[in-house]
Structure formats: C-alpha cells, structure tokens
Length: 482
Ligand code: GLN
Image: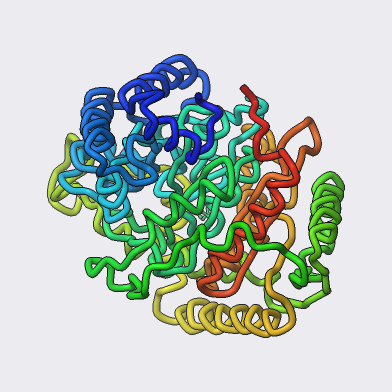
C-alpha cells in the first residue's frame, strides 16, 4: 500500500478496500518504525491525524469525497497548522503551536486530506542539505551517509522512504527541486503567486513559493489542483480561473521543442549527471521531441543575485522574531535591548545569522545601490533571457543539481560550496517561472539524479504532461530505497 500512487489510493478508498483510518494508521506505523533513523519528521500527532481520518471516512461514506480525501500528506514544518507545533526548523519557534491554518493547510483540510506530520527542514528554509535544522540532520534513505538535500529535506526523505504518499515543500532557490532530485522523487515549484503564502513562514517573500513533492508527475498534478488558488490574505496571490493541472497529462509529445541552455551544459556538471541527462534526452527524442540549443547569458549570475536578494528579504522578514509575542525568549536578561539580543543570539542558528548579517549589509546606506539595486536589475535581465529563449522552444531542460547527493558534513563548513548546489534552480525563483525535477536514474555511489524541466509562466499543465509522458515509458519514479 505504501508504494501506491495517489490515484490508486483514491480508488482503494472509494471502493472501500481500505479506510482512511487504516491507511493513516499504516503510515503512522511506518513513521514510528523508520523516523528514528531518518529524522524526516519533527512532529507527529497521531491524535489529530486519526481524528482527520475519521472525518475523511465519513466524507467517503457519504459521497462527498474528492481525489485526495482520506490520503495522508506530510506537511513541511514551514506551514502553520492549527494545533500543531510549527517550528520552521528553528529553536526560535521550538515552542510555537500555531493558532491558525496556512492557506495551503486549509485547502488540504477542505479536500479531506490527512496531515500525517510536520517534516524536518533547514532552519527557516536556509540551506541545501537539511543540516541547519535545530531538530537535527535528515538522512538520505538511498544512502544514510548522504544528505537528502534541502531545505525540504524531510519532505523528500519522507516520500522516498515511503513514510508518506506525498508531501508539501517550499522553494525559494531550489528547496523543492534539489531535495527531490537528491532523493529520487518528483517535485514542482509552480509559477510565483499561484500557491498561497498565507501562513507559510516567510524567508524571502518575492521568491518563496509552495509546491508538492511526490513519486510521480501524475501525483503532482492532483496535489497542485488542491494547492493552487487565489487567497485574498496573500497580497501576491494571483486571481486566475482554475485550471486542471492534469488536463494535458495524456497529450503526445510529437513536435515538442526542448531548449538546452548552453550555459547549463558547461563545466560544473559531473559526468554521471551529464550521462543521465543525455539518456533522458534520448528518451524524449524517441517520444517525438526535438532538442535545440538556447542561451541564457545572464543565468550564471543567478547565485550571486540570489545571495543578495534572498538575505536582504530574510533580514527584514526575520526581524519579527524578537521574543516579545511568541516563540523563544531568552530566559535571563537585564533590559529590553538585552532581551532582544539574547533571544536572537540564542534562538537563531549560524546560517540564519549569516543571512541576516549579509542582508542587513546589502540594504544598508551606501551599499543598497551597489548590491541590492544592482541585483534587482540583473534579476530582470535573467528573466528577459528566459522570455527570449521561450520564443524558440517550449520548455527548457537541464540537470537539477550539478552532482548527486553529497555526504553529510561534506559542505557544511563551506557556505559557498553549499550555495552552489542551487546553481541550476535559483533562476526560476528569480524569474517567478515554474520548474520541476523528476528522477531519471542513478549516478555515483548509486545515488539518484534529477532532470530539471523549466517552463514559461503558467505552463504547469504542459510541464506535468512532459514529465508524465517520460514516466509512462520509464520506471525511475517507481524505484524506492525501501
Ligand atoms: N539553498 C537555498 C538557500 O539556502 C535555497 C533554499 C530554499 O529554496 N528555501 O537559500
């Protein structure tokens, strides 16, 4: 049962072959058994999950069920969920029980899905390896010596190790796609503004976007259909007519033009990743697609631009964590200023402090023009490169990450090396365009490799179609480490 697709689970539930209570109990059991080793979940709350399952079983019995009713979903611990400890991977929120639901959580609740637990993540979503979490590292279920990727490392691990049928993640510079690639699962960051950021703890608001992580593109489509929707409580939420993300899944790919950016097929990509990408492209040509070279001249600047803009926004967003209203407060202090200082000194980890310092610096008088404004201009140029490229091709493909998962501890002492993990992914956040990763094989030490599929604004249904057609003729997405 734990290997089943969302569609299969939905059918089993509808045909009463299994109840949501049974299904939920089975996944809670797996979490109990395997989480001590993987540490994919920060919080599990059997009582709430089973109470939701009971409600779902009623919906199923009375014919009110939708495609996700009764199905357990792991929620990244960045999404506020009423009654749940919501930590964002930080000591700062280690005692925060959310009094309200995020927009995304609300939508899953309305759909009758079960919250099976809150997944581990890099502190405030800052990281590429899940090693910055206050709640400890997460292991890659394919090889416990390897990182699962980050920041949605717990979510990727949970889906890969079959501790949940699917999960949510958030992606500010690659945090859905990079861990999906390193754990051999599928994940999509939708167009900026499609998924509500209400109640999704802010890291860099102009880049943050929630999205689903699952075994297959078909599963992602079902999840996106629940997640996407206008939310007046998020001022950047887009008001658009609902579109069925699964509507194009079956379309043939004949005539599809795949753009291969020459900048992404240059030095930096390891041999094992390069050959897996080449094999995936052979498959796509067999499916009727053609590949053409395109150029994104400014894309190689994505990492420096990202590491000016993301910390700038983070330094502003994280100023709310001051120990006054909620979250951690230093136990002993002399006056108010000392309380702020001690709370933030003790409550934030080293990587978060580094980002706040960089962000404050690039926004400070005299440096604002030199760094922040310049980065904003480059951001626009990067977006223009993509817009130009999409005049010549329908979709862009390349590697999601330059290498397979690295070892735990391998890069944690070297921030720049860590930041380079997102060299291919961060452009999609800067442009706001959708991008996804699907598993396409294994490389060094038998660790998974992901194909990065990038599309123009609102091309989610087309991208899922392109991923699904590949998954119909290959079985990488069905492989599991357990
Ligand atoms: N790895 C990047 C960072 O550390 C991106 C993180 C993310 O997408 N949340 O900022």
